[in-house]
Length: 516
Image (tube, rainbow, N blue to C red; front, side, top):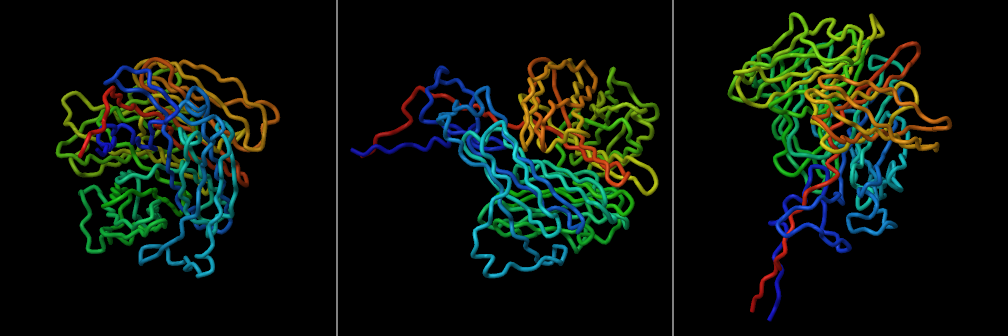
């Protein structure tokens, strides 16, 4: 008699998380009753980082980090404490098939035969690792983290452009591959030069569709963006202005992989406002939270798109240090179905840090909304822009790497009820003492801006981990500021939940069957 085991995949679909996979580690015994789920760390996480901007006088720094402790990285997932696993990124060769910038060279046969060297290889949880590269010609990156280094693995990509039309600071958190992404705030205007970077982390090719939406709805064009082939393990840069002959100041962009998964981010470059990454929006039915507007923001431009069948009305409020208020003249906005709306929000912050909160109005139509905010700082020839997308909340924990001793601000937002939060700082990537965690209370309907204080002797870049302990819903972002030749440059990254734990169903039954 033969004994054949039924695949567990059909019964434990919760093992697959957005950021990775959890397995039933052989060294762990379940304490949950049969039929109930248990909470486990993921054991594999994948990330992609877009190719840095092509500016010649620029440097890009990557900082990788995995938080540890509290059952995330201490062997609680069935791995022995000494089994660290791996966590590193590898170069993704550029591939151009009529869609790229046109300045990439094909790989030589000699280069193709060589194994690429990993970048920012992480050694242990709780200790950040940084690496700098000359940006010009630097490739996109793909990689995975496994075992104890997987739960919460995050990589920050920060580029400093020292001169030229794109002078400024570009930042983005490397992203989890997925099959669909939405963006709000792209442009094909004459002053803009926007590229969507598509990175395929898998071995097989995939085909990607790029769709643009403007004030009159979907842009129909024979130039199109459908059927962009991205070979396995490569990256493709698609210039948005090659997909339409309409120069539009504001666009929403939908990127969809027909099969498999990809990474997708938009490099938004403006002749007057510099360059930064436009990251995907968390499309939701509300509330929509855009956290971390700097206190010295000069202009704010809101771009929103309703992809559903109904018009959506949104009430507008700004959450500041002492509470929230409704801005005069911009109390609400109405989004017509499948059309894009863009409005300027003048003097919204009034010199204080804050967060924008959009809540579906009473009687409004249903449906998700795609929304982003372009923020500018500086004046005249020293203006620079950054983008803040609507983001997902921190349900349990989130981390952000690549922070600097000066010029780092963490923004915590409680749009409804007060939230108790624990903030943990790591040591520096080049050494330094690890400070004790701090606990904060973010009052209801307020934004708490924190400038972390580091111990003396901290060297290199460090990571911040935010944990929601109790209370209402929590949102967060991190702002980096750098002074470059008397010009203040900045970039903002949001902190969605790291999805480092998954709920695994339990069963007390033998899932095998007997066959003759």
